[in-house]
Length: 199
Image (cartoon, rainbow, N blue to C red; front, side, top):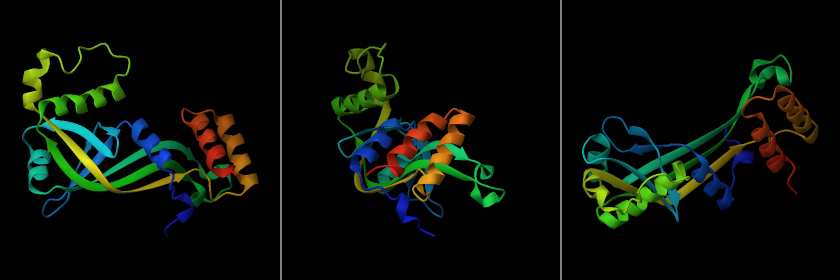
C-alpha cells in the first residue's frame, strides 16, 4: 500500500539528502535485465555527477541509451517491534529515499570533467589535502577517466520519520530512542521532531 504521509515535496530536503548520502544506485537499460551499479556522486544545480572507466558495462550502456534512473537512501534508526508491543509487524526502519529519472551524458570536455571531479572531491574530502584537479599532473588521468552527468528530469522523495504516529506515540518513541542511545538514534529523534511536530 502506498503511504502518502511519507511523500515530501520540499526541494530543500531533497537537496539535503543528495548532499549527505554517501552513494547512490544508478540503473541503466539492458537486456534481459536492468543493470544497477552503486556509485559515489555529487549533486549540483539539477545534475548528478559521478565517474568511472572508459570501458565496461556502465560506459557501454550509457553510450547506447541516455535514459537512466538513480536512487539514494539514507538510513536512520531501526525501531524494534517491542518498543510498542509484542507484535512483530511493529518493527520498522526509518529512512529518507529519493528516486530520480533523467538523461545521462558523458562529459568529454577536459575542463568540465575536472570541474565535476572537483565537486565529488569536495563532497568526500572537504578538508582538502590534494593538488587541485585543474593541475597539469591530472592531464593523463582526465583522459583515462569517464565522467558522467545525469540531468534530473523528475524526482520523488520519501522520508519515514513517524508521521503515521500520534503525538503521544511519537514522544514515547523519542524517549525509547534516547534511552537506547544507538549510533543513529539522536539523528532520528531530530528527524521525528522535524516531521511530526512541525506546524
